[in-house]
Image 1 (tube, rainbow, N blue to C red):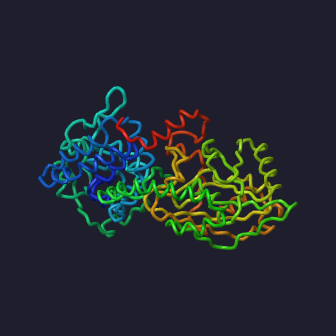
Image 2 (cartoon, rainbow, N blue to C red):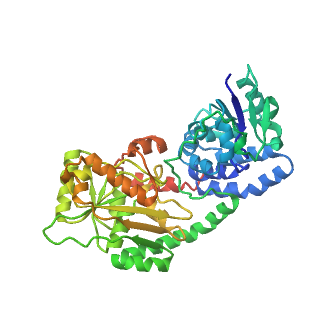
Length: 490
């Protein structure tokens, strides 16, 4: 007989029982700073309603302020690209072990289903999600209202289990009007213990979040959100100073001056010396964490090293302080370009083809291994406190600005030894073997995991496209800048 479990999300599978911070994420990423600030202003009112026993009213107020006038597609995009990382970080693994030991798994949530369904089904392996439903008008915009009453959730659970009641219910007895535990044969309440799981079931692991988008590093709880809002004007001012000073100073001076402005560059290993005239250059093969990786590498080396680019915008190329070599994605043409640049001197390539901010490395393109035996792997990583310096859905030219808006941005550059001849194609190894070997040693250096995912996989998950950048007019570029900040309601 199939065993089944029904679990509450808030306060059970996730440790935090208050969904407020997730609505703040939707407000910031789907609409902008103004709605983000407005929802924070309503937080004391929401807390007061909770204290008066009017939790449903407080939840409806959160939903209304965060979603009214926002396109449903934007909410779905945030739920796909941004929220899973924060939900995963908040998962109670003890509750997960109990939940995952059953055959049929259902999750009940007060949060709109559209916000949690992708994460719960893809990462927690749930079969069904029962949550509130947003009302969307015929133009595709959310009205801010929910369809039906939140107290109807237990009835919807009962409809899923028509033939037999669920074997187990996981939840808080104080959940209030949508408590479904009375429908279950057994019930458990947090905190959970691993000995409560069925010993004859193999424990599944939640699927990790490999691709993640959005600008905010930390989940915006009320205190964190207030700190972000207070820091934002000062952060923009500091970022401007850092960028202007960086453009004025010679590259050799930047690592020393960065400390005066709160930044830090950590260098490990020994970089190779510049090549002598008449010799082919060294190919620096880097992990790709942000758009600034080649710039930071040039700063550490004290000289401008050209960087191979895949699909960055023309505007980003104009802003770049180092030369860039745009590839065409035509293998023969790209190989000739890289060979020509190596004949002039050193070159930087990021064979992942796109950034990945989680502790994973994407599949390395093998093209670089075919073209030279002078390969120096470089492990790049960065740490920030408030804002991520990468985006798949926003405007990439703003990546350096968001990086420098952080109070204490840190970059780590680790030079590995140049590959010995026996590890290159000269010894008869295939380009794919060389590329995989370089990926493995870089992953081991950073403590990351290797994957077979590619640039297209990332953009299909985060942005719903293949990641190709089209050349658009200056007016459209300006519009995209404005849409990145989105300071007004839709």
